[in-house]
Length: 63
Image (tube, rainbow, N blue to C red; front, side, top):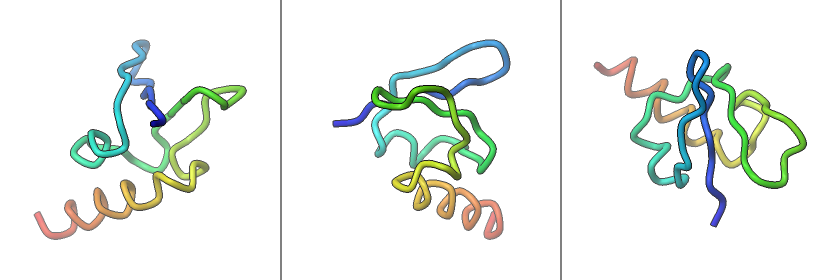
């Protein structure tokens, strides 16, 4: 199972599973890292996070 870390301000938070990320506020430009990545990248560049980003956006639109 892949575990993800999120950079928030000057702090790195995690690890989080994909299921846990679904309930967090993950934006397209949120910096994410997981084992196997050479460096931090934005959530929009990690294909498996597309569903998380979409769900967050839909939640914001319906709230």
